[in-house]
Image 1 (cartoon, rainbow, N blue to C red):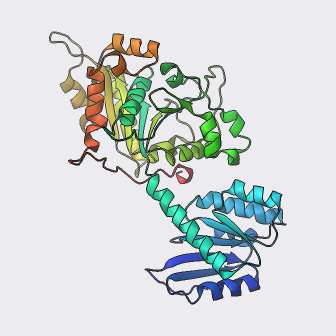
Image 2: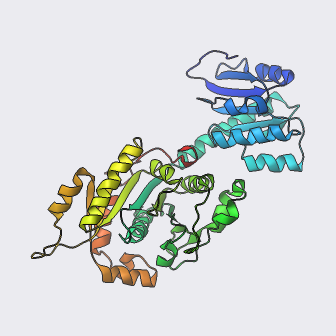
Image 3: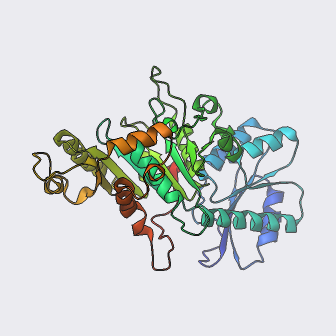
Length: 405
């Protein structure tokens, strides 16, 4: 029972099995020309899994909180919709257990019947405004580094890129930046920055609903530069893959609270890898300067392009490049011919500099300001964002990892 299409109106979807609440909602919103009301009659247990919230600004769900199947259906609905559109729960009873359940579902608001019409209207306006504010402030720009071969130096490049992004604001305040080590088995980001890794996925996995901003803050490590780091302790003898939903929920949360996010990816492909790559603004495949490395990089570009048609264009960085005048090694022209348009940058080789920075747990620029590695990365990552006014150019829409598949 739809009130008709109103392209300029705010669409509110209401699901209820209570005739009295249906009549109340119609009387509350019916006279408002600015509201496009979509009323669905039925219980959330019956209709929640198939409810369509397309173009909705707010979804109101009338739920019988005394029934576990109703609460379970509401939880599935809020997980499926995420934060947009926001969901307002309406219940006929309210106690501490119900409050706890609704908070875990992250409903935007909840009301108890009977209620005043003005309370329902205000709840909708508040939920819609909060959702718009959150969307406007969480356009995370995602930079992902994926190795083509082992030992290509991905972590070094990811760390330095995160540092460059952190300091890209010039005289303005530092933009919030997070570096995420997704190699849960052999990750080295925390070691490179001399930090204690604090992420405990095993603790989150049994109850992923517990993962919120407060718990994330507990599991973040903070570098003296201001860089936030998500890293787990190494588990070299533990062969396991964490649940897809747990990982994507973590990354979705990270991306919604930082302006810049850098992912240091493992070489192994997991169930959640597609979601990370699809959500990236920039995807860099890192190769070493060898014939096998370039071949693997080229193959990986082709595989990702075919597999993720709607994803970002894979670009290849050739790391530790050194071309001496009389050397018989690979020349820049050889690399360009092999990789074609996918090749974007050759990072100079300076093993001594990188080793000292890693041993001290500091950025390369702190060891040697203006070094060639940082300069080349700055040309690749930071300079393209600049405009004549010195502002950043948005790359893509905000990350929606929880719904990528």
